[in-house]
Length: 95
Image (tube, rainbow, N blue to C red; front, side, top):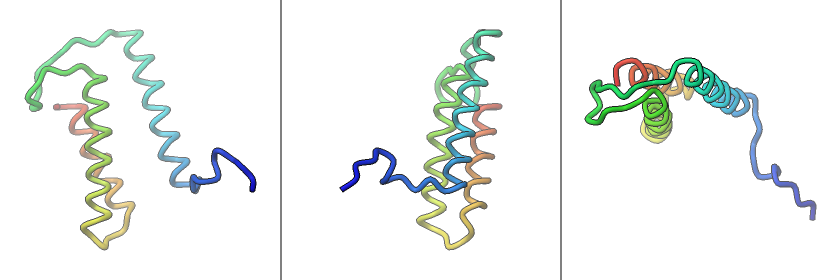
């Protein structure tokens, strides 16, 4: 029996694109933070947040939106991914 740490993961192109986008977001946010440190601000979220806080909350929210889309609708998954991405953008901008 071959023991490969990646044998359980389905590395399809959409999965690879998804994780590549997250890594690129984290790299971009790190560079942005180093060049221009963020300050806490109050948006529509009930707590003061920094850019990193809003990214984390936005990624979690986008994941939950995507899971809800998968579980509650029969529509195409890419539509749910776009809805999740829009939620992430709204949280980053106004959250």
